[in-house]
Image 1 (cartoon, one colour):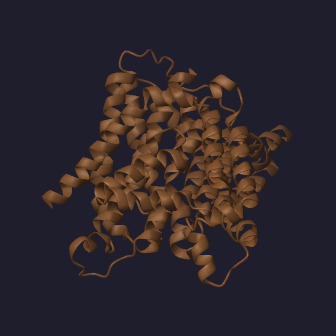
Image 2 (cartoon, rainbow, N blue to C red):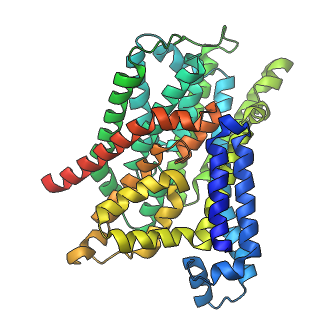
Image 3 (cartoon, rainbow, N blue to C red):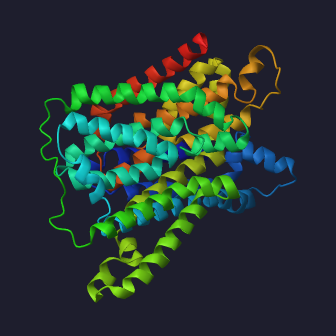
Amino acid sequence: MMFFLMLVVFVIGYSLIVFEHVNHINKAASALLIGALLWMIYALGGESILAREASVSWVNFKASGGTNMLSFITHHELFHHLSEIASILFFLVGAMTIVELVDKYQGFRIITSRIGGGNVTRLLWIISFLTFFMSAALDNLTTTIVLVTVLRKIISKQENRWIFASVVVLSANAGGAWSPIGDVTTIMLWIGGQVTAAHIVGSLFIPSFVNMLVSTALFSLFIVKGNTIKPILPSNETQAFTTHQEQVFMLVVGTLALVSVPIFKTITHLPPYMGMLLGLSVMWIMTDRYLKKRSAEDKRTLTVTAALKAVDIPTVLFFLGVLSAVAALQSAGHLDLLAQWLDESVNNIYVINLLIGAISSVVDNVPLVAASMGMYNIEIAGATGSAIHFIQDGTFWTFLAYCAGTGGSLLIVGSAAGVAAMGLEQINFMWYLRRITWIALTGYLMGALMYYLQLQWF
């Protein structure tokens, strides 16, 4: 009973988020509500929920000698998932603060002055290509935060920004899928040994690029064409209150702080949020020292403290609620049952991965990929038959990286990039579903087809 009650609460809470424009309840409040309620139900009904033996985590916990169900839920699982969620939130806050600081120094004027004018379709393609390659070097979440901030400077009307922000989400997820550091799921598969960095770049660049090209082409033909986006303004800022040298300096330093995160992770093997916080601390020290020469007004507006006040905290709390809710479902065994059903009922690696990608647009790709990694072992080199798909750099793992990375684009809440864009621009869930989902689905399937054809040709 409690096992199914958790599903009911998740569906109802998800509906509150979807229909935010109807109930006028902030989506962050709804997300926090379902996150807290699911863990409460889990803790109160843990005995009946875990008695189903659906949770792989619980089975492993018992195998290691653990017996106390309540301790497993409230200490082992809750703190385990909290550490993962906190790492994402610290990363998000750090990235948003760096971007806000660069914005306060008007560093993005260097970019907007070069891409702000001209043809709307041309701007669309520039943003799409820029996002695609930036997300591979940074990651899809950081890139989305940066580009959405830039869009605010060059597009005035909200719905027009929604269109361009949607392009950013699709291109960021496509760009993150072919890079070992571009998305949380590719990082997981890379660190787990399922794929190597060189293989994922070589195998998924073309499918991901096709995904981006098809999606952007559909945007330019059916969404932007004939649309009066006027409103592509040179900048929303009327005058510069920082010098050109200051703007360039802060843009360069901020970019280096963001780009250094994957390098930091590769060298130290520490979580990405540590690198992000390191970059933020360096910028904080530099700006504090620099502001000794500025006026009292500048010291109030150009500090990291001021940038922190401008960070969109509801977006951070929305992340917290959604990730907490999904973590509860994963710990209780709902997602393990889903993965098991896919394995037993579908029994085709291509269809399984396509479905994982589609489902990840609802329940987040990270736990689904984690469940898949737990279900299948990495086979040794030289394996034959169906086992060959599960060797390191095998077809299953590579295609999983593509599908899990890009499938989240189908819904605005289906990826970290989408959730960030939704929070920053208050994008309406139903608006995205009606206007963007079909584009995301077409790009997703065309990229998948290209991957399949690539295997046949090469």
